[in-house]
Image (cartoon, rainbow, N blue to C red; front, side, top):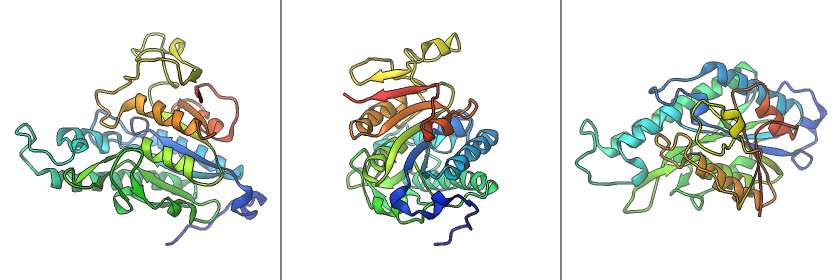
Length: 289
């Protein structure tokens, strides 16, 4: 495994793992891609997020990065019902088999991951990628996989993974492992994790009702408690892995383990960086029960 040369001079990088905090951050697929246009990257957003991630490293914080699929995964996965596993459905497209679609989506996700790596490389950020189909099995929060891989990198190296199509036990044979399930497990099982940050597209956090472009800023829930109710349907018609509802559900599970959990806009100023560093930021903070 080869890492790019580190250029961060700060003493924090030299103190070793035990004295460094870690943050798990999720770059949503609908944030880094045009989610309704096949395989279209939002390069300006990626560049901004990479710059903010670099600043977290400069401040002495280790980062585990998970990114969503957006238009590199959800559109094709939905068409071929990959979230359902192996099915016999006459309504499936007949241009390829589900198994061929699995390979296509995996390749598409690695293509998107290459864009993420390229954005980090432009900032001279050292990173290594661990695609889930190479190390994980089964789906949901109890997926199987060796998470110690994410602690094997030296301090200051960003370890990246993403939502993916993984192998599953029969009869499903395959399924979609959501990035939201990944961040929950990573945030609660890796050492030193201080907070979990969801960087979202199109919204500033969790809204009281689905966004419609009319005074959405006034709908923001800045503090969400586990007993509160909201309509978890932001883009849910497109998101085959659970939409905002799953993010909040997994976020609360992480919060119950003592992890700070925030959902913020990835499109506005430096909110992702501020959330990762624990600075005051506009967004939604989840409070455990």
